[in-house]
Length: 147
Image (tube, rainbow, N blue to C red; front, side):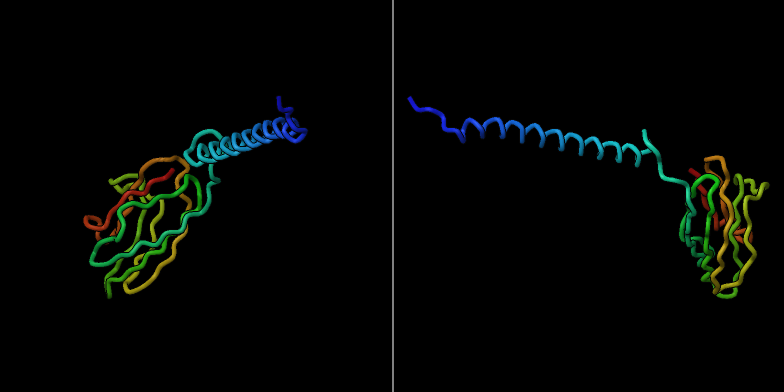
């Protein structure tokens, strides 16, 4: 009968140890990825810190090029109005609702072509608010979503 060599006697336990260590490392890495994904989805763990938002909205042919803007609750919101309508007045105004009775922020009127940079603080309460051009309130409107 053949006797196992010294290398085989030592190799089998080393193989088992290497397997266990590798499995633990892979399992730990998978748990870290799982935690990062949960944080990104708003699950357990710290979420992204609120920070300033920067957006550009174009006004052309009496319409905005986007109908939804999104910001973080209570954070700085920077919106650049790109008025591409030559000789036409536009602005961008944010309200609590479509009734446009309570102003969150209202920019000055500007004749195009012109770029206008505006900064204000988004509402502290998450929700869906309203924005429009006050000169063209029937055609230039959108939703301001605060998260």
